[in-house]
Amino acid sequence: MRQFTYGLLLASVCYGSTAWADCRNTQDFGTWLNNFKQEAISTGLSAAVVNQALEGVTLDPSVIQRDRSQEVFAQTFLEFAGKKVSSYRLSNGQKQMQANAKLFQRIEQEYGVPAPLLTALWALETDLGAVTGDYPTIRSLATLAYDCRRPERFRPELIHALWLIQKGDQTPASMRGAWAGELGQLQFLPSGYNQQGVDFDGDGHRDLIRSKADALASAANLLRHHGWQAGQPWLVEVKVPREMDWSKARLDNRLPLVEWSAMGVTEADGDPLRPNGQAALLLPMGRNGPAFLAFPNFDVIRQWNESTVYATTAAYLATRFAGAKPLYAGNAPVQKLSLAQVRQLQSQLAARGLPVGKIDGIIGEDTRNAVRQVQQQLGLPADGYPDPVLLSKL
Image (cartoon, rainbow, N blue to C red; front, side):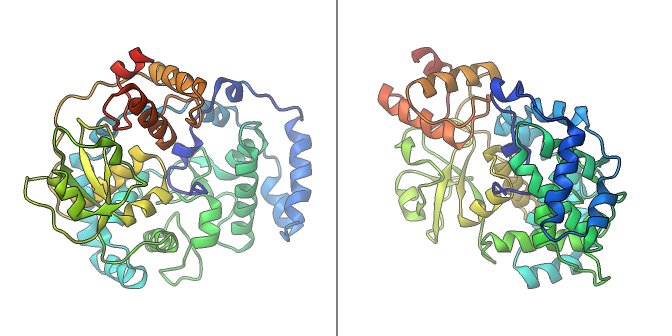
């Protein structure tokens, strides 16, 4: 997981700068593939497995095109959640939780991860197993492992995919999934599949594509591996006052709930906060948008996918499956910057010596931290979310 080897890897995968988009390979694909076969065999893989799985594999230009053009995570939280937390997903998710109640109970007893969170990830990743993708996984991974942009990320994934074949979990023909190599009902990359996949239905194979028991239990195993705390909350919607020290609202600043309460933060319905525990105040669209208390388990969801927009949407959807009401839109309309404007903002922040990560138009945590610093310098509310006022001042 970023390490982030599963889930919608796509948020970390996000399209890079123009220089990366225009990079070129200096070696032809056939020569590279022959060299890679020897590298794979040197890890202990059978030569027969390697040669059979990679026989006739060709470059897929459509995968490279997809890798260069992702913009889904440039959406705001309300835009993304508005599409993903649909009445269809809510209804179907509740039906699946009821129909598979015994399975979810077994999984929670074993791994401590509750049905609402697993169902939310299941719904977001593949519409509850309905849309798992039809790209040949070996070809996709070989393309990305060869391509100049992120070969160091995908060479290990291709080797893990070959290990799945050698272990008998899948065959080259059965491995079909998303364009970036994710597999199965919870969209694991091969490394996560190989390292955290479990045979929960007891048939002797870890089949995360066809077995919902294996897929859901493997997701729970992975979340536990990253520190999931059984019986603890992950995200709670709250209301914030119109004025407070906004610089405290950041994911790396976890405070006791009594302190947030003293600053005027309340339950979503206006009731006082329950005083137990510590949490960070998460403002995915700044001081005027929706507000949440993010507990330690939210950090685990970000291990699944570190995009703040995706992780918040998944966590929010899980709260809806657990019985929460629809979210409150916030204190005031939020002015959104366009993709081009965010890139312009990132370039200007970088020119000031502030680390923003990639100049990609996505408001990630690096960009939020840089925005917060420059907001403080300019005497603006330091909520870490850029708006046209900040852009004009820069």
